[in-house]
Length: 253
Image 1 (cartoon, rainbow, N blue to C red):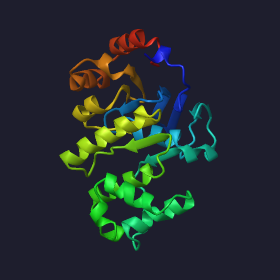
Image 2: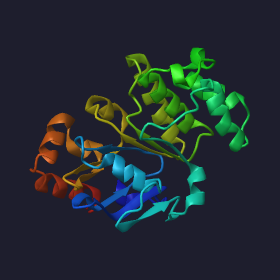
Image 3: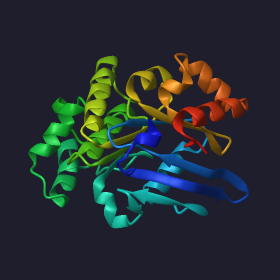
């Protein structure tokens, strides 16, 4: 239960609001992850999931609200604890996949073998010598995921990490991420594959219309996640959020 968790959240935000001109994208959004858990960030297209991830990573300054990382107010130097894959990261097209990753392993003081380890992990072990410019969209997504996994950071922030993976790859990633979190780390995942979320996540935050519609243990949404998600994101959310608060000690906002 959230109220019983003694360890401080490794990644959290409170009261985040973001507007682009006259468009209010996020309003008073709060999210708290739990070390050892996989946390799903859910919402319909355009709900602001990518915007919130950008705020959490310091890529976008919110109009209001705060972010904490590793239990302390956000500071850019603390990003060394974070691995992230969001917003189609760029690669050096003239370099091979392996050499792209070795740029990062070198900066982090890690052996070259770490690049090979994460390539194998995402199913690109046989494509390490290919230039990144020749990769398909799905392969680039897997390369971005490999980059996020370098050095086994304390916090992973992943936007649609299953994209580009076949069913076997999705199952392997699911097992890896759950084991990764169980070591006391934090995994925050944005995904539209609700069936996969059921197997992957422990907790969830659902946002729609710029605000939080649910925050709590995923099990509180019941066995039919798709039905609950539809109800939460189509304006019938008040009762569901209150139910989540009651079960989670009032954590939902």
